[in-house]
Length: 244
Image (cartoon, rainbow, N blue to C red; front, side, top):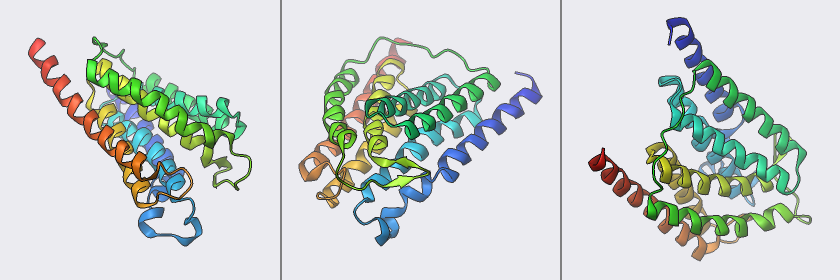
């Protein structure tokens, strides 16, 4: 990649990371529970979910692309998260979320074009990671369904977009990234998905009665699932290294 285009690719990815991770309230919403902001005491998990999606799952791979333009797994992760947001918007349907998703689509397309994104190297699916993704998918649907159907509870809103269907998209994105890790052995999707599930699990145990909580039992299962994802990913990567 030529020098000028390389600089442009890094700048575009960095600006996008700042926009989605900071200006789109990724970091701010993630810290709401840490700050114990009383204005959101019923919506801590929704606030954290928004932050996890836009800061951890979306902005982190943009930072990777600012360092390594065109990185295939990072670009594919952006596409997976974007797809999850669009599915959540269509699931309700929720037009503001779909417009939000369109912004993500444009971001991914621009970053991929400027950085001359490379195709991802697909591998045979890692059995345990694939199984964890398959187990996680129905759990994500069961978790997201009541959030999608909500018609009675006043919804938490950020930038005109409801957190309720976005939280359903978060669950789908986590599972999708574990599936991506299964077919790429990528540390980025595996670790960001696992850390997100772990955070959601810990919050659910701490706040079992809040909106979008998994409850004490569900939170514990999410924590265990996240740990299994990390362990399975490390094993799969070691086996792949031996084969290579």
